[in-house]
Image (tube, rainbow, N blue to C red; front, side, top):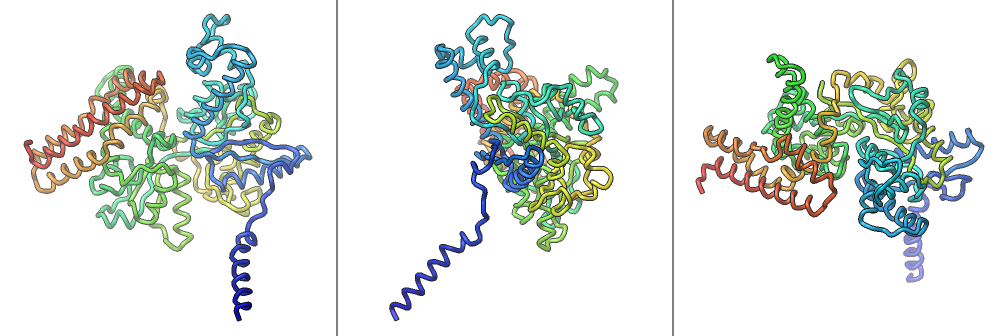
Length: 546
């Protein structure tokens, strides 16, 4: 009997251990193919699998050779940018000291990646020499392609010099006429005129909400504008991502700023100011309006996640009632709810006239170890064959095999004629959806980094105090103490320390220098100041005099 037990136990162990291998997918080992391309990306597994499968097939048809995609997945765009910065610094340091035989100094370190430096024809300083040497070099980090992330980060990488041209501007203009893929659209740049980065897929920003949850809170009308997220009934019900961890969500907050500036400028024009006067005054006033609106939205936040998918999932489950979301996450989560029999309780909307269309780019890195294959990888991603993967439904000819990616292709012809019928969402044309909004980069483009910094120090770091003050003000209104509520609100919403001229001047300059010690000092100073301010607002709203 004991022998039989032993056999049974061994059989069970064999089944338990063997089952994972029985159902495991067979993966092609890197190195089995003729060629390879190394790609660093924040894109998810579904995107990676579909593009790897599609590229392998396309590459073999094009060249008669086989190819592997060696994906490097280390986190989000911010993590990738930090990694590339560190690796390029190490690579250039080795080149400078070993190949050129020069000493590594603080001036060299500051100069080689200074994207604002204009190097003269005959460099006169060591920093200028280092900058020129870096731009003339093929220093490598062993990676060919940077694929995915916000255009802001790609613009910075191009200016630093870590991205190199794929095609020149004239060639790109010939490849992509406006009717196929415009370089500029509603104020946004979709591809670099020097060819260092090219938008590979489009994104817009909006609001995802749970109809049942809103009804539970007594909100019957569907949200249509960003300010709906500031409704006091949504306290602890808003799902937000941390803008310091996500360039995409920072872009969404930037849309709020642009909207408020635009409203102010229009008001001043109606009052008879000249366009120049209206713009100068409207930008400053609109910035303050936006900061006060974002403050209330953040006060309603249940959390600030570093995962772009958590918010939509929590809104779907009812853990949060509403949130800010990138379009494809919102639409994808809505489809999941419908597929699981949840009906149309989860919805996504783009605020009319208050959201732009931006591109998630792709580019070739300096010193790419496999330049010819990298060149063809970009050609594939930007071809109609590659673009169909973003938007086509599973099973459609030329579409994805396993996963409907539900992203918006950059090529306009895909939204036209019979091709449109193959899309997962044929009713969605992003080029039409955001036509009423015009993004003005001269207003806020240079303040992208300061914006994410300020949201952190003014609203995220002192979030507990922010929420308690907001609750106290709402409580004062509910008990009819209007005077206390108004006095507390005046203290609560006093954001003079982050007014437009201060942000565009001293704060932006501090962040631009890269002095981390000074940045930490400024961060602590502002966060502590806002904590005291919110505590004072709470005391006033509570009717306390201490």
